[in-house]
Amino acid sequence: MTGRATATATVAVVGGGISGLAAAHRLRSLLGPDARIEVLEQRDRVGGVLHTVDLAGVPFDVGAEAFLVRRPEVSALLAELGLTGALVHPTGAAASVRAAGRTGPLPAGTLLGVPTSTARLDGLLSDDGLAAVAAEPRRPLSWEPGGDVALGGLLRARFGDEVADRLADPLLGGVYAGRVDALGLRATVPTLAASLDAGAPSLTAAADRAAAPPASRDVGAGEARSGGPVFGAVRGGYRVLLDALAAASGARVRLRTTVRELQRREGGWRLVLGPTTAPEALDVDAVVLAVPAPAAGRLLSAAAPAAAGAAGEIELASSAVVALAFRAEDAAALPPTSGVLVAADEPLAVKAFTHSSNKWAHLADGGLVRLRASLGRFGEAATLQVDDAELVARARSDLAALTGITAAPVATHVQRWGGGLPQYGVGHPDRVRAIEEGLPAGVAVAGSALHGVGVPACISTGRAAAERVAAALAASGARGSGGPLAR
Image (cartoon, rainbow, N blue to C red; front, side, top):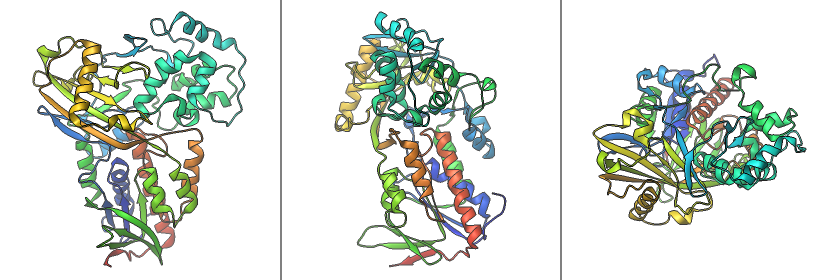
């Protein structure tokens, strides 16, 4: 969008996570310096599932810790905010996987755990598992273009159980906190689905095509056109980006503010805020909903029932991160890897350890070794309903089993993410389409429930939502009639 809506327009952004702040920042550039932008956040801080804490004197992310550099959104935003120098890349330490009671290198040559013809799975799979993978390209494949299936079921049918349980499930469990058998192919590995749609004769051939370098296939949205590091992080933690984004947006950020209702009004929208005993009304010209899908569904129930219904079908998973700091001499047995993914059928509570000080040079500071354990998968929320001390004990027990480290940490932090990650089930793209196409003019949605759970994808949805409502304001000639009213 190149034109501006009326400079006095008022827009509410519900949700102060990275998606909401990206929307507010983009709204400022589209609507100009005089527009009124209100960011309404239920928590006592911005950031959503991005959260930086102090771990033994070093800023440490206990939500998302990295982003895909091959998508341009984060790098571009850092440059726009004058923070290019805060961009850091991993050290190159290799990842590992724990399966069948053994820890070994994470195999190369897979597409999110789907084997390509170059995958080397020795040491991870049994002889029978290896034979099943080798035979897959010769087996007839039946695929209906445009269809969607559970990724786990497809992998089991084509490669056997071991690929699903020992490789794909650990990888995708880290991304979605979900089970591979419940995740939809089309939403989680869209390039693989596209290769099947295009007539790939086997799943291996489809993975080969989808994993090909961009130079040998069409470059998709957000993909890099050249080589380089795959992941990046922000020196000082994501709070550096969040604080700069909030400041640059010029928005009024209201913390500890619950939005209970979204109502139509003549010329715009009314948000009902606060407790039922003392409600407040905020009248605005447009709204961006950057909240989890169930919350968006509740707010849209009256204004956009079809969109609300689709949003309400998206389930959430809960997880937890346990951050640990050890004296270097106490963690001398830590392998020189970037971390370990854990197969779901292993007798361990954690689903992954990130060896943060090995993975990120800027976190190897102060003579301490810093790690993070990830716990919790979809459908296992009850396993997290213990106190912080028990979660730390479980993480330490599993660390001892994997590495032999038994010393007490010098610092810990437990971060719980109740309903922190949306589940991309079978048919997820259709749900997202129903949400976006069912919205009335002047309302947009953003967030991890839409087009990807990673930080770049969330930024993209926030910017797109801002552009949608700015276009609606320009079309309607909104005169900025919004404002807070006592009720």
